Image 1 (tube, helix red, strand yellow):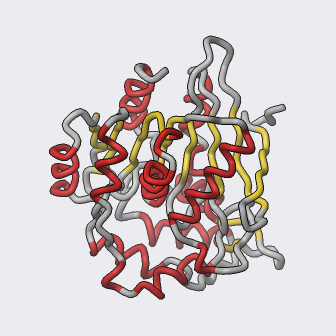
Image 2: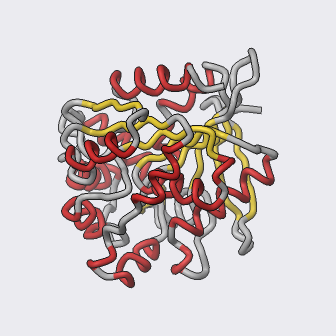
Length: 293
């Protein structure tokens, strides 16, 4: 039974025994439609979809918004080297199997889009359609280096005001229109109350271990074959923040040429990554989903 936030809690088990968490939003009554699997970015969690997921569910699609291993209410991994997209993709396949879902629409923000591409390579049939939020098969090294610089680093946030200030410092370049109230809400999505009562980032700092192990030359892998496989025979939508430092306009143009049938939307005044509560993002998502079974 959904709670007052519109979702119920679902857990599933990974192949290496982790207990993983998802927010499960039931679709509104009506003709059966393919569900949506929503996957967040590197340091985030399922709360990133708390604006768009209920709206999609009201349109008749079940939405499962995941906490990827090491984030939110999912278990932390015993081996930090499992914090990589191929493992995350296998975790998603385990969810689909345990939930009895044969095919779904995937909505992936940043890392979530990389996981979606990995899924299309691992088990192509499960991906009926894909929405990539500010991510592609190639990314700008500058944006990736910026994210890598703060991921997994210790943060002093003794109060929620300090947590909001940290969130603003890290993300204001992407969301310059945010108010103090917006940054407070952002902090409450990305921090949790620690054992001593102070806010702590809601992810395992060891998610950065594979990034550090790979070194700077491996920060921007070439995933064009994965993208072409994803977009070749299935509906695909790319959403890009107009000022994104991770997905440059030149990369988006290359993606359009590689996948001429791909739908595209740009969110003005927003960087990496759109929160999907913007009018342009919402309109693109609902237009896209309208034609999906």
